[in-house]
Length: 250
Ligand SMILES: NC(=O)c1ccc[n+]([C@@H]2O[C@H](COP(=O)([O-])OP(=O)(O)OC[C@H]3O[C@@H](n4cnc5c(N)ncnc54)[C@H](O)[C@@H]3O)[C@@H](O)[C@H]2O)c1
Image (cartoon, rainbow, N blue to C red; front, side, top):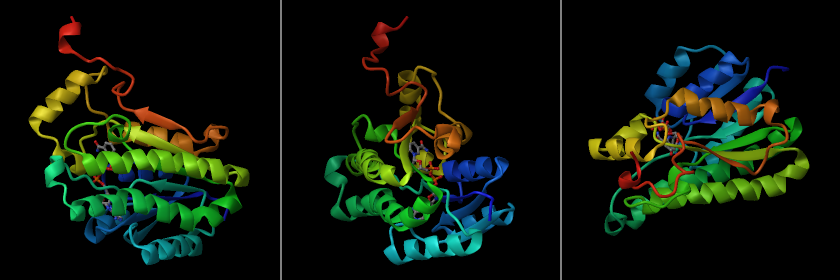
């Protein structure tokens, strides 16, 4: 029961899977949570020191079971990585209430439910929460009324939880990834969007899943023991640059 344990939601692929692998490399055990049963069982089947938990983070009963199953397996929870997310992009007039609710249910309700449910276990370990927001929560843009708002809310929720849970020794931070070529991003990024991102990002490229995982695992670890309530953009410099007019470049 001395081996640390992280819950990673949305762990079947993409940033969640890269985060799982980095935790495993660093000697943690990982409860891999995902609602995509086949991708989850394939990913978990190829790894040791993991528990596959087929659950939906937007469902309160599932989230309760997720925490119980993790506790029963590992005996402890040291980190909760709220990574599960969905992206649906489109003009505001096409954003139906159903679409709004689908995005909020996973991206915002899921973070709320998982943190509330895991808080007692995290108190016992003085653990950490890392929420995966987005540059879309830092800077507004077209086509993402629901997604951008959900991610901005996750940033605020991170600060709310940091303020209240600090007295129990629980740290809460957010990571805002820039674009990464995952299934989620490739479903909504046209070639035109990809080119425009390259143009607007000082490092002039997409990030990798591993580069995001490095920041997540750092914030979850004791190396970040005096860091809470912070929002870290892992975005190639996108957020820090204001006026990005091509005419101002050489
Ligand atoms: N890829 C990017 O460019 C990018 C940029 C900024 C932020 N993000 C954020 O990073 C996180 C991970 O995204 P990704 O790009 O790796 O996406 P992805 O689609 O590759 O992986 C997301 C995983 O979450 C799972 N999932 C979705 N809803 C769920 C739910 N309700 N319950 C349980 N599992 C659920 C999916 O089945 C999938 O396996 C998301 O929160 C996303 O918004 C991604």
